[in-house]
Image (tube, rainbow, N blue to C red; front, side, top):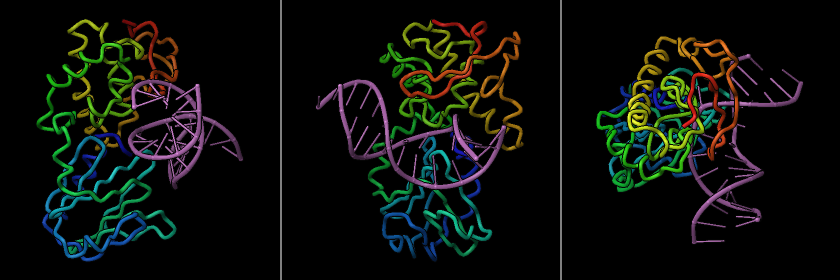
Length: 244
DNA sequence: TGCCATGTTAAACT
DNA sequence: GAGTTTAACATGGC
């Protein structure tokens, strides 16, 4: 599931529990789940791929990692790896195979909320400043960097670089200023396209590079290669994507 | 069937 | 210490 846009869909599903009181908390999360019982879920806040269930004093941070999933209402899967299940008067929320952590609300102050590419307060100028201070970083690593582009994952990385015709191993400092700006604006733009297509269940159909065999522009075979320090797979066209 | 992958963290290394 | 590599987690799709 879990790049930023998918998490936004999860938030929409959870929203009906905002303002509601936790009746029961179950699961194998490594903290005292009873601390949540009787507390009211004040707000659901996102930061990239992270979801914060905010209560008085404390919050639960959920990260679905690679294989995590969630379920609203419905029957709990019998032999599943349930990390946390919350019951409210109007339904239940289950979180499976994910990272779940209880944090004090002070922690929220340490987050740079403006780094979330899908946030209303996304700050592209700040992203540009961070990029400029890391000229030796490859663009594939820059996009995957959650402190710069919180919410971007491997799919978004590959599609953004295809859209702006930049080879993944290009160095940030070598990009001309207008390319750097395209990188920043498309990280956000594509995330919203991802959201729209995910909602329609047509995401894969719209992939131009990610896990594709041939370049949709020139028809040549795409390169599939582990790139950068993040060691994640990149799909790109040698002919159409320029190495800076 | 076996491999790979929408991700992160922490331990174990150099 | 800094930087890098590896393991762990654990599921579903191809």
